[in-house]
Amino acid sequence: MVAIRFGTHEIDLTDGETVLDALLREGIAVPYSCRSGFCQTCLMCASQGKPPREAMQGLRDTWKASNYFLACRCKPVMDLEVRLTGDLPAPVRARVQSVQPLSQDILEIGLATDERLHYHPGQFINVESPGGLTRSYSLASVPGEDDGLLLQVRRLPGGRVSGWIHETLKPGDTLHIQGPLGDCFYCEGQPVQPLLLIGTGSGLAPLSGIARDALRQGHKGPIHLFHGSRSRDGLYLQDCLKRLAARHPQFQYTPCLSGQDIPPGCARGRVHEVAQARFPCLSGWRVFLCGHPDMVQQARMMAFMAGAAINDIYLDPFNVALT
Image 1: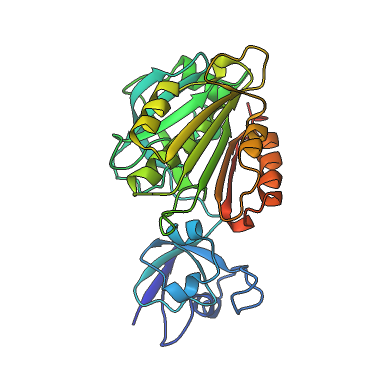
Image 2: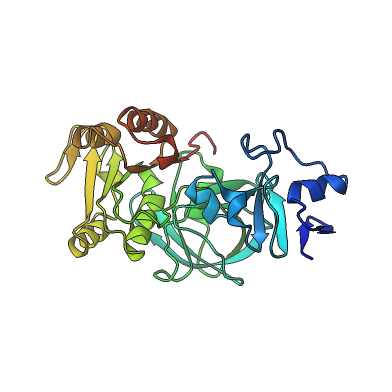
């Protein structure tokens, strides 16, 4: 007999019983509708244990990699700890290991946690400031390559959390984080599929992690990374990405500038428009879009109209309105 844990509830399942049926039998209110796996209303996540493959049919690859499953189809073969997808993981304590400027307005923050955090490069974590404000920052680090977690934090004008990070945070400080969260990351399984990565500002953080992770997992297909800014001050990690391109012929990096001063080696124009002109047909491609929400939405439509399947377009729009 297997059992599930949901919050404070521990429930033994009868033979052939689904997770949804067991929760409803115990009077626990969880969302559901069709009970046949089509509406995906009963989507849940396993924090511990692995759901059976049948419970993941029809879900996008990143959801499967994050242990998402359909409760109405899930007949566990092992004990599971489950939660609703909207429920956040418990906060954990992190220690600041390093603080390094990458540009005039971007700091790279290195964090270490007492418990090893399982994550995919490109996911994000929530960081809580001493005043109780919480902001989300994407992970640029790659497990097995980097020591701890790496965040690239851009200082926003009037930003209370980003200002605290830039002005106050130092090695040895501790803070609380939640995560990992998000489904904008690389999944293996299609090693020759072309990858297109487009970002603005500190949207380069998740994209650089995704590119390095794909290469580390042996991706053989072309990987094209376009990073855009209005001025050259907004470009960073150029030397690092050029070295990466020199080591891996399937990886190409294109910095883009939409302002007037365009130095050699940079493409002129808005980053998604430069990428569109370079690759007008994206049928069969996987696309990752990170950064300013206006760019992300415009590039999403561009990628879809160019032939990319909707399930192959992954988004991480940054909420620039928060301060």
